[in-house]
Length: 351
Ligand SMILES: Nc1ncnc2c1ncn2[C@@H]1O[C@H](COP(=O)(O)OP(=O)(O)O)[C@@H](O)[C@H]1O
Ligand SMILES: N[C@@H](CCOP(=O)(O)O)C(=O)O
Image 1 (tube, rainbow, N blue to C red):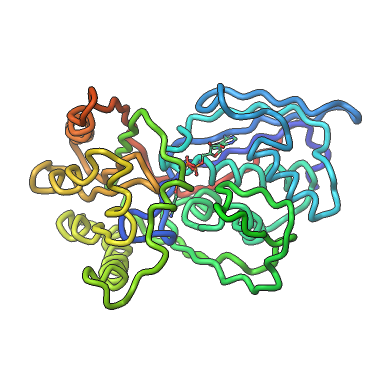
Image 2 (tube, rainbow, N blue to C red):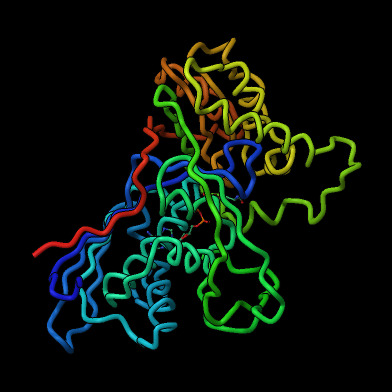
């Protein structure tokens, strides 16, 4: 039982999805945490929500509008609970929004954990994944955020009768306003945690502009043909199979990983949204920059993710230099050297 605990803290890691060829499949959790410090208030008190960090000036703090709390409200409503219990919630968010580090996925996971703790729902992690997938339909951010580590995942196709109108919040609203299922069906998400050698860290080079995931998905083709000129589907399948094992092995085979991180399914179409990316992917290699293991777009971008074993500052500087050479005064960026973390989202109870 958790109801006697007056305070609880939820922490959810940032993630990077895709890792090159693993579009909508692979994701990895990082040592950068969205946290919610929660305290139960006396019955009848209004919800109090405060927020610091990334998004502090833009994220709404109204329960029905904020992605964390509206996700929690949706989960609670499927249990017949129509409002959040009286709570004081302080959000601390170091994950930049709209940069391809899974801020929305982490917010969705935090919302599901918030509902679980606040409503004493006693959900299993697998059940929580189902709820996350009703809100964020691609699994590659929410699965590693929930479970930690390097995760491959898929979700089953929903049946037409499950696609009925409802008030499920979407982290990326569909462009055509397609209807969403009313309650989570079970057994939607399937995943496996893969090995990741501890020698490989991630350098996230974060430019000072946002790309909404919805916009970065809108530039992708609606169909891929087996016989297309670049054989993009087969190209990616071959690489993803090699990459998932190569990233677990010691000693690190940088040349193999770098080649296996190439992609033809999403990155080429997103070039136009991320000035300098195509040059970075060609020019920053294990041969040109010792320590580099691989390079890709992080999630839907615009962050560039370099996997590396050493020389982190020099490698980051090379990416930043290419951003700065872009037209109209260049693009400023910051970078973070991140560890892959093997624990996912957590709820700690106090008092
Ligand atoms: N901590 C948060 N609290 C509330 N909303 C958030 C939070 N983090 C992200 N969001 C919502 O998610 C949007 C960004 O989602 P998205 O475009 O998918 O980018 P990202 O790559 O960062 O996940 C933000 O504009 C905001 O609406
Ligand atoms: N597979 C998705 C991943 C989006 O990740 P985000 O961190 O940018 O939200 C995609 O590439 O669209």
